[in-house]
Length: 226
Image (cartoon, rainbow, N blue to C red; front, side, top):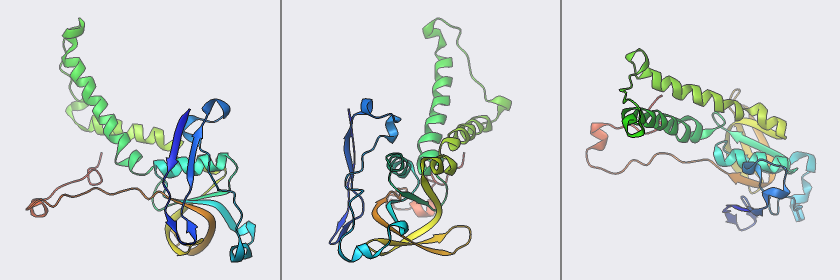
């Protein structure tokens, strides 16, 4: 049994997203990270909202294609919801490109070098690891290779096969049930409607207000290129 939840933001007439559940994985033929139950997702509209034809409405629109957004969109579509996923850059988000995956990959290389230097502790001859071609690029190339492997699992085609409509662009709310999407490639505007919205737009690095930092210069995980 696992517990999965996303807090929701309520406005006077609607909820941006309502996702919460206790999921018994044994009862679902789903990968663990897709096992989501969406509470209230299939509730019908009342009053003026019924003027929208169902063919024009998504059950859920997910804004942001990072870790949280991919899980929400894929899980909802797998359970039968009509889902659209909107991402402004590339699916995978910070975790894949500037966070979890790059950092854990480079840390693992560092751990390997450390173990090699401490091999005597385990009964082996100690080694002094050297970069391939005496260049740190051998490490950053490995990071890129790992990113490329995982990219295939986060590709738009993977989520389209699950039933998710993947759209690249930026969004703004027009009213509680409508958003306007500026398409990335063409710049064209597209209005989309949904019963629920899951806002998973991620975060950005915090730069502490340290005196002289701006003048000295600094980099964040988003600036450091592997």
